[in-house]
Amino acid sequence: MHYLMGVRIDESVLPYSDEEMEASYARVGKVNDEMKAAGVWVFGGGLLPSDSATVVRVENGSTAMTDGPFAETKEQLGGFYVIEVDDLDAALHWAGKAAEACQVPIEVRPFGGVA
Picture 1: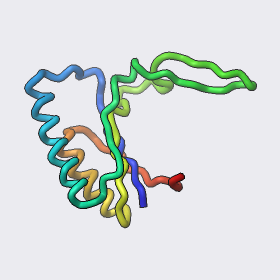
Picture 2: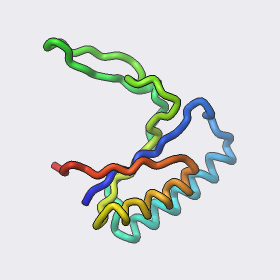
Picture 3: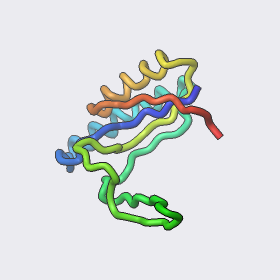
């Protein structure tokens, strides 16, 4: 089964120092390598800050685009992993490793299907 592990960040505490970023990259790289070695890694990546986003919506047959995130919230999606594991327990195991490495909360959601 495929799971999305969303990396939840608080953009109000950014940017990190160069030393903090290097330490974070090292921790996250180690977990990424563990996932790849275990054969659960499908895809993952970090995202630019939410102010780089464009929201596209259709209302009454007309497409509208706006800058930035749709939801006004302190936490934003800062990155994600897509993993393939047997069950939720296995996904939570990897989410725990990712949360420790990223030092932020990780939201775990199963896919409803994969096309």
